[in-house]
Image 1: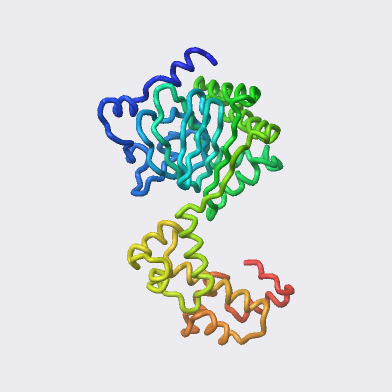
Image 2 (image 1 turned 90 degrees about the horizontal axis):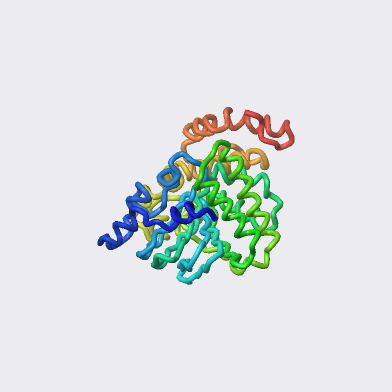
Length: 328
């Protein structure tokens, strides 16, 4: 590795200087504008598709999540992560991939412990995925990373004695430290090749685990309730089931799904009604009542807004097409 690059990698960051100067803990506001500790990719990438940063030393890094996938490469020393209450210790040359759904903390690292965090935007990963979609080790991990309801997952590779992988990471570090034109194409090739090498040397994969994140659990709980209780679904009922204050739950649903609770219920009711219109001979009035509506005029207006036609004409068009939903 180039001497200048090594010096830049190991130099004290401004954050580390503040910690050594008396700052007692990592400042959440340096990483996210939100209330929850979810590290924000825009704050770190600054418009780039992929970047790297030295892991902050001299203090424990508290449990947090990310809105992007990252991986840590330990260039020297060791770094210990805490994932789901378990310690995962990386030594020099090791790699830890963390998908965007997982939460983890990192124990205090010292001056000689050099962990490099690589930050990968969704757009960059989707571009790379085209090159590795048949990769037996990385393709499913990447696919689950894109799943909005995915679980937390990590992959831990002991690659300290695998020269081709370490050499490739040196090249990736150099490319990011000395940016040139056509950066994204070169970086995509390097990351794609890294994924291919990890599949080739799959014996270096010593641990991989899925851990349900609180966010994923919440999404599944709300979605399951709406699917099973849609005819009589009530926010207060759901709040009692999962132990939230109704007002807080209402806001959390809006933040998590980008929709209100009532909109989620309405969409489920209309989807069930649409399926019943296509696949049964139940009268429209019976379908309206079965999905939870008493006011048929209101239902007709909602259905027409969602599917572009009245329930009766929609059914006729679907049956004429052999049960296939008519084109909008």
